[in-house]
Image 1: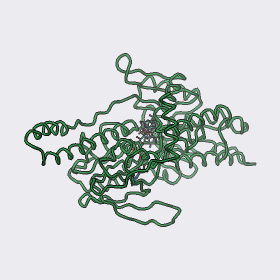
Image 2: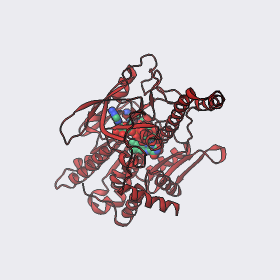
Image 3: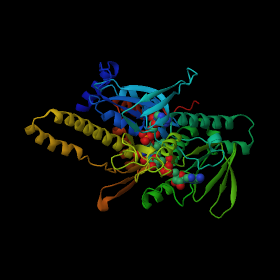
Image 4: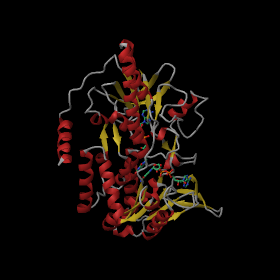
Length: 475
Ligand code: FAD
Ligand code: NAD
């Protein structure tokens, strides 16, 4: 009942936003870079009574990445897994200034950032500057290519909304072109060969979704082609899902075999060309594999802005993978820059779980900083008697605990309504499970972690729609 009541309240506020207070020149300003998992979790929890808050991001929304693979084949609609940043900030006491722009420069000495308008519509790329008291860097990472030639030009990444849209278009293009009259059998085979590079969770989940689309929908609508569609997954290591337990790796590999998805392990892609890829096999032989669609999911690398920022701290920023931060998420070498999520190089994996927990933690830390500043001001005018009490309180506040990650487990969809889960409880502190029941758990876990009632309602509706009507096969 409480859930439904809160949902109704959320819907009301969405249509009738609160009147919010304007920015306060007396308060310190936090500039947040990015609107992904890390920055959005921070934004949700930061108290705008204490600070002015400005968000700068080239996209004006939060994307729920765990369900992105489902959007590539139309299991769910892209709009169901995004949430405008302004909606997320609508409960705040003070207006959050959301600027759709890319941060192109950070000047830590002047505490100033340069931003560039990334709008295509206006056709201009105006730039401006913003000053900050605190900067929170949550700009994530970008897809790694490891310098393999042709990936950017011919491959599709799977990280952002536009990547999913590109994959969808390319996939349907391959299928429709293969259905065009008088194609040669070799060309049909090439067009219908879907290759996924990278056997981490992104590559596995994409291959799984593609398989389901093929079996549930394409077989019915393109019966003459369905038997010819091939899915191949290429992984450089000896097995897929290296972060999962052995039992689940074996389960995933055997499920893929049943689904006719070929896995080529210990195989490195050396070059991507327009119509084929060159791979090196474990025995050292080199092969050319023709493909129609190539999805490249080989992990992350640091964004140029992150590399540029590292160069400004040559003595403390020595890790290439991302920004080095202390246990309180403060950038090593800086007093007022904080960094979190995939933009950082920490001992944690680059996951949404880590990014979200860091965002929450940092909002708490900023609350403590605000309380500390307020107490320090009060101390100046306090009587001797009050001083003792306040100093004790201040010591407590100053003792800010470092960030501690609490792992909630890893989940991965593997196709045919099956998922695998490595959970940190049960006998021996680990429960590894796979199958249809795990898929039900996977769905409920993601539904409950969506950020709004609106998204939850849309995703559930999409799942029901898919079950009742099938997926949309239009391009
Ligand atoms: P992001 O979420 O990538 O956000 C970065 C933000 O910064 C974006 O808003 C971007 O537009 C913005 N930005 C970029 N450049 C600039 C700039 N120059 N200036 C300002 N802003 C900028 N993790 C899990 O734990 N569970 C899962 O099930 C899971 N599934 C995934 C599925 C897919 C397909 C992918 C790609 C990832 C998945 N992950 C999952 C990983 C997870 O999405 C990332 O770890 C998480 O997004 C990291 O959060 P972040 O905020 O650091 O970066
Ligand atoms: P990843 O780094 O986890 O996996 C990339 C894989 O690509 C690795 O196994 C690597 O060996 C392989 N690879 C690298 N170069 C290659 C090459 N040239 N040829 C063939 N294979 C190559 O990347 P990801 O799957 O994109 O995941 C990124 C992060 O997001 C991870 O932390 C992951 O846990 C998280 N994520 C989680 C989920 C989930 O929990 N369901 C889903 C997607 C992503």
